[in-house]
Amino acid sequence: MKRKCTPIIKSKDGKRAIYIDDENKSSVLAYLNQDDRYKKKFQFISEIILGGYKNPEVYDKESINADCKDVTAMKFFKGQENGRIYCKQINTADGVLIIVAAVLHERKKSQKNTQVEKNLIKKVGGYQYEL
Image (cartoon, rainbow, N blue to C red; front, top):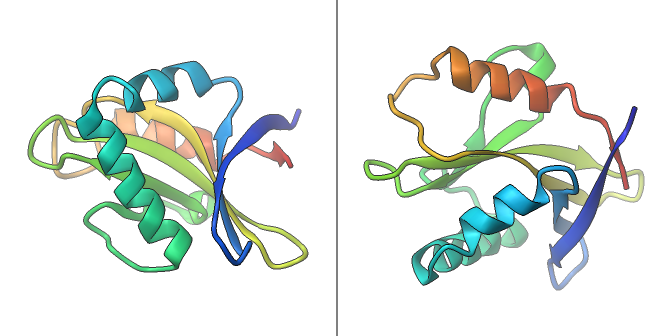
């Protein structure tokens, strides 16, 4: 069954957009809205994504296997809380890159991906979205 998602922000040229998974929307938004620090970090990450820039310190692929090649992570406060929002990248037929903020992982505890992170990444890799 396909999951539903809602657009939250688009690039000025319309070639990139960030959506949010409807089922996990409340936990992701609660995380992002807990204080100004998180809001500013999300805004910074969004600007990087929508501008088409690369910055693996805050947004990068999470390629643990071939099934998860389109899973990425927004990284919040590495070395501190180290939260992650795992995302699914989708390229539409008309050339728009959509990043769906799918699952929140509030506190990554190690540099390597543990089984907890791998399970979340595999779960997001299996998601199919209705746009």
